[in-house]
Amino acid sequence: MAVRFDFIKDEIRKTGGYQSIAEGVAQGSYPIGVYGISDSARAALISAFHSEHDQSVYVVSHSDLEARQLYEDLLLYDLEVYHLPVRDPVFYNPYAISGDLRWERIKVLKEMTDGRKKIIVTSAEALTLAYMPLEQYKAYTFQFKKGDTIELKTLVNKLIDSGYESVELVEMRGQFAKRGGIIDIFSPVLAFPVRIELFGDEIDSIRTFNPESQRSIEFLDEVEIFPSKEIIISKAALVRGEQGIREEFEGILSNKAHRKALGEEGFARLKEVVANNLESLRNTWSFETIDSYLPFFYEKTESFFDYIGDGFIFLDDTGKTVGKMESVATEFSAQYEMFLKRGEILPSQGRLI
Image (tube, rainbow, N blue to C red; front, side):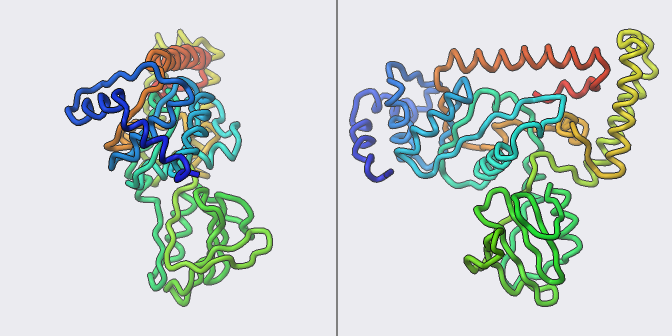
């Protein structure tokens, strides 16, 4: 399909308008405004630009609906196109969203970090969010090759830390199972789970398999396993987070003005929330709203731009996109103030965007 429409991209590159864009890029005259492009021509223009440059292209729209439509249009011209869906910064359980959406986001986060040239389409919300340090994703990404040696106990612990659920039989994404010298892992970024067989502590074989029939599909020489959740809490991050949560609550405890603003009911609620979360952290390293506590676990969070590195950014309808970012900030601030006054969150959770 992509080859079929190459002639359209060739014709676009011959136009005076496109030549003006190319000249602006060559001279580094940013930002470059592009006007008068119909909705149907946007994808062709972006794809024509992408095919002429060595770096990735990131397209930001004002809504997730618009971003998905543009993504689908781009698929007509390019195979290496991905859509990063919205993850709202929320103070309640973030996994009330569908599992499919979680896996889709994780798959695209991997694509953002692997260095290959591609097009990624997202919406304005993606630019406003705080992200976990990228180095943590790299630290919990596993590379397996035939002949490598692995320490099974360490691997199991790291899989659990990076969001995988230990089960008896792997059936769904985000699960792993260990039976003797065999470990099955279903990464959210892979089409099928992988089975790694060990001879002693050496990898003897790697293969994909059908989770329903458990039959082998393809033998591999190597495979990469990406984390299964967006927020990874290492032991060091856990210690830092627990200490930060405790210290912030103790600061509120000793601040009469803050306690008065909360009122007796609000303070009692906050005390209960903090106590329950700290207990869950000690026992299970997690709790329902742990994603909203990201600022406690890492000294410095990162942004969308830290993840993508170098590349070209297209803002689709700049006025609406910038307006959407401002509206996200306003809505978040209102939600933050409401939860804070009710005693359901701590002040540092305001650093989620």
